View 1 (cartoon, rainbow, N blue to C red):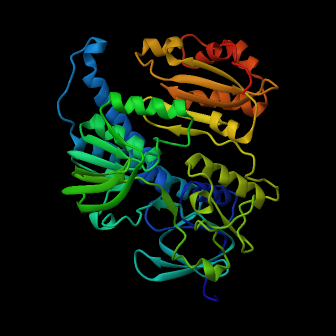
View 2: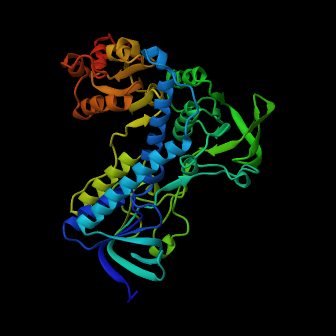
Length: 464
């Protein structure tokens, strides 16, 4: 296209990997443009990771207030001001947007607000929000369009206008009865948060356990937590149809154990998975192919089927985590600099931000058994971690899989500050340190990390 603006790098979507690529290359003197349809900085700081953790923390504070007598202060059981909860979240998001805009200004990367569509090889036409169009062409182009909540084809579901996490985080009132469709990460975090804020909550999961891919002791522990917090859980449930409108009144029809069931609520949250944002952006005009699941087809270097075009993050089929998208940035950055960096073999840490948190890195027992990998198991209850006792937060456990060479194959923590704890074990795993290194390390007392001394001093159970 003869009238296009030429850049060294054009990024479609301002999510984690794309924005860091833009800021980095622009700071090196490259001419860079980022096209963003709606959220400056992508989903994470606007409508996903950080806002949800903000709301989750408000819910934890509400939980502490109700537990006040346990800590020697007057308990507070009154209603939660959801407008204030929402406004605290909005204030944080506004601050994050300002940080992003400053980074664009400081780096010299150009932020183009509008909807972008490929119209040819490495060329994107943008319908600008303030009117008109522009065509941008890059020597290199990076697709960073992310993913969105999936709303399946259950009869009546789309007509019911269910909440996704985006709308749920903007509520200025408490649902009387929130029905959550999906027992994965998003569903569980939102379910507990809204229960603690004061809603009646029921989770419906089609599989036979919540977060069903985890080990049985993990799913059992999450189930016990939800029972103790009076969150309804219906596993092994198949939806057949939905009636009504979310925000007013809804009826969810399904089958469970061969019997029909009907559940009535006021609000419906769709949390049954995510799909990549790859449709309707003209990839066919750019020579970019998709895989069977709708992700951009990439190789281990994150190159697409079109020369000079890369894809990163959710839309490229990378694990749907912001920290993985950040590593995708590093992969493309280094490859653009002439190195040969790949995505294969990298560690993928997981964290579910319920209270307590569930965090894991490396193999689970289920995965080790499926792959026929021998291991020894070390496991302790969180009550054995003295810091947890000082916090009155003894729910959960720590466990580690130890290989025949004494290296750590996997680690799971269900307990207070689990998300912080796994970084210590992850470092040991990445360096190839045998478990004895953590067993014998002098760790500060009393901290949660000190529990690793206890865990790895426990004689590991025999080979499995």
